[in-house]
Amino acid sequence: MLQQMLQSMLAERCHLVFHRVRGSVDGYRLELARSGARLSETHAGDTLPQGVKLTAGGILVPSPRGERTRWSFYNTTMDEFVRQVSMQAVGHPVQDHTGLIGRYNFALNWISDPDRPEREGSISGDDPDPLSHWDFNRLGLRIIRTKLPIDNLVIDHIERPSQN
Image (cartoon, rainbow, N blue to C red; front, side):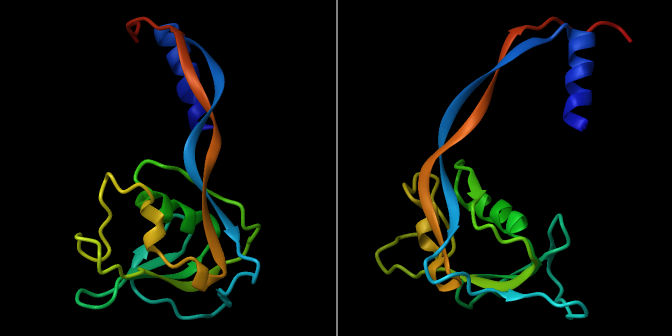
C-alpha cells in the first residue's frame, strides 16, 4: 500500500511515467534437503532469550565473542530467516522455497575454513559464494545459486516536483 501511495504521489507531483521490464539477477534459493528440515517448532509459552528482535517477532542471538560463530534463531519464520541470510549474500537476493510456514528454533553454524584469511564469521565483498560458509545442511536445508526473476523499473519521464 505504501509503494502504491508513493507511486501516486510521484505521478502527480513529478509527472512520473514508467514501465516494468522482466529480467533476472544472480541469487539463491533456500530449499529443503532430501532429508527434510531439522528445525524445532516453537511452542506457545516457550521462553525466548534476549536478542535482536526480527520483523515478525522472531529473535536472533549471535554467538558471544570468542565462541564459534553461529546465529541462533528463536520463534523465527522462514521469511525472517531468509531476510537475515540475504544480508550475508553480499548483494544477491535469497528466496524461500522451503514451503515451511511455522515458527522455528534453530542455530545456523559457520563452517570453519583454515585456508580463509578473513576472521571467522566475516565475508569479503568479493567472495564468489558468500553463503557457502554457513552450514545449511545440518538444518536439513540447502542453498542453491540460481538466476532469480525480477521486475526492473524503467523511468520514461520525470520532472522536478510541483509546488504543494
